[in-house]
Every structure is written in C-alpha cells, then in structure tokens.
Amino acid sequence: MRLNKGLMISAIALASALALSGCTDSGAAPSAAPVEKAPEFDAGSTMAKLSDAGKITIGTKFDQPLFGLKGPDGTPEGFDVEMAKLIAAKLGIKPENIEWVETVSANREPFIQNGQVDMVVATYTINDTRKEVIDFAGPYYEAGQDLLVLAGNPDKITGPEDLTGKQVCTVSGSTSEKNIAAYTDKIQATDTYSNCLGPLRSGESVAVTTDNVILAGLADQNEGEFEVVDKPFTKEPYGIGLKKGDEAFRTFINDTLEKSFEDGSWAAAWDATAGKVLETPTPPAVDRY
Image (cartoon, rainbow, N blue to C red; front, top):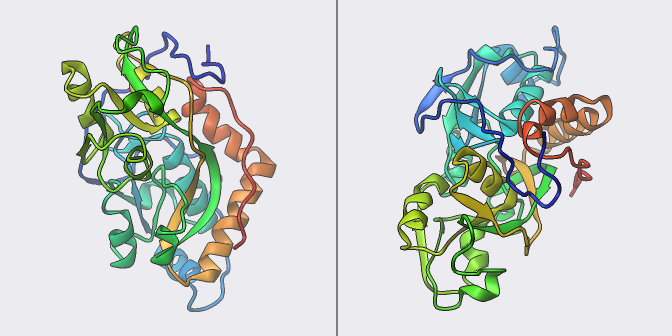
C-alpha cells in the first residue's frame, strides 16, 4: 500500500530500527545501479580523481525517514542514499567504498567548501543564495513545504496563515526556516527535524515545518501520533551540492541523473525507498544553468 498524492499517512511503518548521527562507511543494502568497470574520464577532472581513488565521501542526512536515515547497521538508507550510489556507480565506485558523512542543514555548504565531502545529497533545496557559494546538479526531485501537526489537528491549522502568534519548530539554516518567517516570528530552530517532535508532542510548538516528503516520513515513522496538513505552500527542488566552479563534475552528475530518469534506475531507487510509502512521481527536468 502507498500514500496517495495527498500524503495521507498510511498504516505502513518503515522497517528500520532508527539511530542518529555520526560518520560511517557503507556496507549495507546494495544499489540497483551496476558499477561501471574501468570508466574513463579526462585527466585531472574530479571524476578521474575519484574513480582512480576508488572511493568517495558523500554528505547526507541521517535522520530523514524515506530519504536519508541511519539504519540498524550504521549505514544510511533512503532515496537520497540510492541517488548517491547511482552517481558513485558511474564513477566505478562500489557502495562499500562510499564514506557517508552526516550533513545537517546548517553545515552542508561549509562541508562542500572545505572539501570535507565530495558532494552532498541531503534533501537539499536549490536556491540562489546557496548557489552563491556552491553549485548544484539536478534537480532530481521536487518537494513542497508543508506542516506536521498532532494527530487530529487539535489547533485546527489548515495552512501557514494560521500560525500567526504561534510557535513553529524547524531546522536552523534550512530553507523552511526562512520561508516560515513570513508567517510567524515565533520559530523554534533545532539542528534536526526529529528534534522538533518532542516540542510538538508537548505543545511547546503547534507544528513542525519542512518539506512534505520529510514530514510524511516522520509521521509514518511515528504511526498514529502526527499528520501532515497536506497544503504545500512552496516548491522545493532537491539538488546535489558540489564545489562551486566544477562545471565538468556538475555536467557529469546531470548526465547521470538524466540517464537514470530514462533507464528506470531513478524509479527503481524511489520504489525501493520512499516508494514503499509514497506514489512514484515524475522526475523533474535537470537545470543546465
């Protein structure tokens, strides 16, 4: 059973024991993408360096059900993780040679700029402010900001217009924090969205706000406690972050994404992760800016 496009939360629970934070090497669920044998790249390119090294460091979320969630063996799982594996596979890098680094909303740009990661795949909304300091490939998915409330919606919140004078929880440094500031100045900012669930349970905050697919995952993970208002009020194109000015690497990732849209590997990655709960969407058009 899957949720319909309204993101009404089903009774299916994600089959993962959940743990948070840290940095780990991959060794768990195999990617559906076949690993390229002896791929060839221009000498000196990022692709050649990574392929020759046979390893890559990728930033992702560790607390986002459906997209990037640290699994019982310490390896992250989800749609973002599978998309990252698709790109690594085209470089000739096996899943077990990916080093996964937890990136939260506030540290994604610094991690890319400082070279702590080779790329970030982490429910990462493409926007002009971020593009001033890093580059994006993609998008590979488009979400929309929404609200998570207690089951039964006791505060009768139907959209962001109902939040005036009420406290809302979100993540510091996220696009969601900036967007919701147009509706309320009472914002409780934490480092991860899972840390917003306690304040929502206690009534300290009346809602949690971020992208609808993230909220759907949190609600599904905590069956019967929460519900998504299901009135998205923004468009959030998810992209893959990389070092600014690396045009060849960005083109390579975009080419890989477009091929995955065409050959079914993108849909297979979705169906194996978020597709267990949500309907399969149509992939967006890659932005070749």
